[in-house]
Length: 142
Image (cartoon, rainbow, N blue to C red; front, side, top):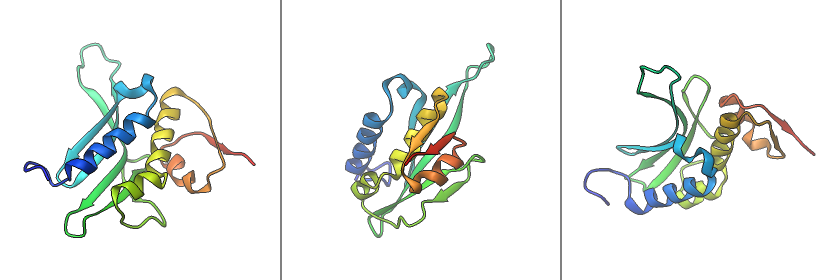
């Protein structure tokens, strides 16, 4: 483990690799990973449209929280008010299990669709709350 943060370096590398693989190339400059203490947050960052403002907006998309004592992660998604919501039915797990479960993928897909104004077509009922929380337009297909 790195001395300046409480997140295991190998887990952080896996999270970064996962995000790099899932975020479309044209949206990568707008996605950031912020590490603070035991939390890893995926952010949607965009330049403001005001010419005199150099800061970017920062909207949270997903957050993985590490429990060093138990050596497990939990996953939350940000609703439209930037409040963190735990994924239903998804308990603490190893980082590989969380990434493989699709929840982070749902948040990143929702983020990319919203960023480009796409309507999502999905068969995954589990993603409904994530897409609603991100205020993404979606429809279920049979």
